[in-house]
Image (cartoon, rainbow, N blue to C red; front, top):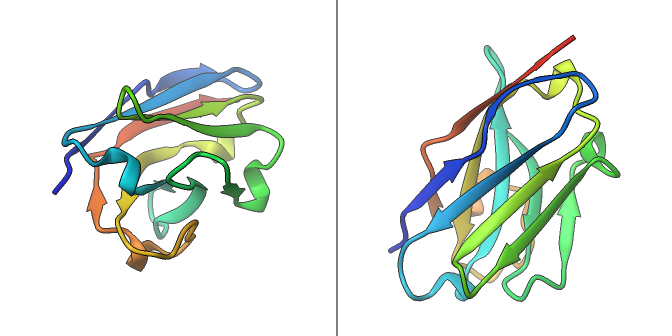
Length: 125
């Protein structure tokens, strides 16, 4: 069992940056692949990025490649999402999630076992 708490959201102008953090409870953080998802009003929750257990592999949705960077610190039991060159279309509630299975770097919501409560990111034009 793991509990996830996101932080770092807020209001930023287009072109700006934010860094999201997701702190995990429990002693087995390094056994989970960690993902970030987002959900805009009236839309489905969508995959943003994932990082493998070791941190050596990452995978991004096309719309954020080159702008967002996912990283993790297993000693601190924290995963990060650095978001640069933000656009109004990045506005959403951002969720971190933990995958305890063997999928490695899944982009599928169904593969994730634990979810945080979300943090709001609003990008003004």
